[in-house]
Every structure is written in C-alpha cells, then in structure tokens.
Image (cartoon, rainbow, N blue to C red; front, top):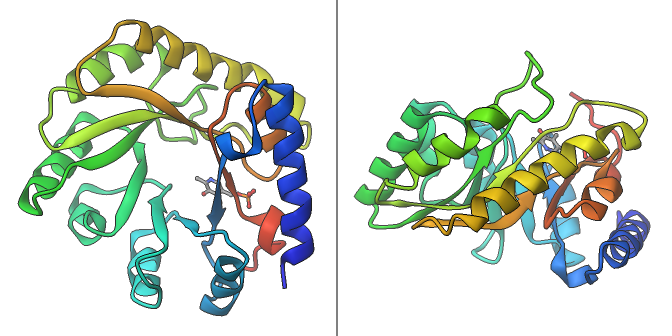
Length: 228
Ligand SMILES: *Cc1c(COP(=O)(O)O)cnc(C)c1O
C-alpha cells in the first residue's frame, strides 16, 4: 500500500531539489493525514514517512495515542486559542500562527508545560479572503512582536497557495514567501529563525521546492483522493 506513490513522490522531490541547488534530504515531506485511517497512517510510517500533518485539533488528539514517539506531529490547519492546550505537548511544529493573541496563548500554554513551542507564521501571500494568514506587508512587524514572547520559537514561514490545476501560477507566491524570509533573516532578530519554509502541496510542491520550500505538505499525492 502506497509504496509506488511514495517512490514517485520521492523522485519528484529529488528532481526539484536538485533544480534548486539542494538535495533530497534538504526537503522534509509532511504526510498530510487528515481523514486517513490509522491503518493507512501506519502503512505510511512503515515506509519511513514519520512526520504527520493534521489540520484539526480533535483529529490529531484522537489519533495521537495510537502511535509511539517516533512520529512527529504537525498542526497545519487553523488553530483556535481555546484548543491550544490540547496539542501543545503533542506537536513538534505549529504551522499556522496567524494572530498575536494566538501566539500569546501558545507561549502561555507552553510555559505551563515547561517547553518552548516551535512555530511558523502563516502568511496569506495571495491575499485570498478565504484563507487565514498574515499579509505580507504586515508580516515583519508581526514577527518582531511575537519574537518577544518567551515560550515560543519562530522557525520560519508557511503559506497555503491558491488552489490551481496549473502550478506555475503559484510560482510567484512561493517566490514572494522566500523573499520575505530572506528579508526578515537579514535583520538577525532575536529568537527568530527563517530556516523553515513550509509551502507546496500535492498539486504544486515541485514548483514550491524550486522556489525554496524546505517542507512540503502532501496528502493526496501519497494516499490518493480524500473521502470526506
Ligand atoms: C489538506 C492540506 C494539505 C494537503 O493537501 P493535498 O492536496 O492533499 O496534498 C496541505 N496543507 C494543508 C494546510 C492542508 O489542509
């Protein structure tokens, strides 16, 4: 199960990594596991994909105990402040920080657990009304502000590009997110690193890697079409 898809995916990741002057190992594949069964997830873990991305807190919580500590859980969907406490000790990275109040809550809950929460700032690069995320023009000020919070560490940026059948259309958005990370990095801000760029999904991950993605979030390209 999934072996052929994974072989193909890895080849494509490698090709795109080389096009951008990097190697396969420079790109982390997050298997997006929303709606997938435990059996499907275990099959994929067995094949060596041990980073899982869930977009709902409840689903992550309900699956979490069925796996051991070898799995890295990523919260990739919109996060409500009242749910932070349920996942703060379970996830290795929160991709979707999009408000100061959310960042403050994460820092507070992390403090209670005596941990530092690793987070990405979600940027709405294409300015879509339907998507969460900070505007590019506001990202720098926002990041400076949340960098002051004690129990979070900003590791980079994340974006969800518009849905399109033509991945080339998203190249400009991926390029803009990369440029933003370069601009922020130049300022050498305390507590802010721009090492991670989480961008690219099944339809457009190759273009995203070519433009500098270090993490791609792939669901359909591994598991097949989702059945909601
Ligand atoms: C579902 C989802 C993905 C994966 O989408 P696919 O097109 O199935 O690869 C990636 N990122 C986020 C935030 C998602 O919700």
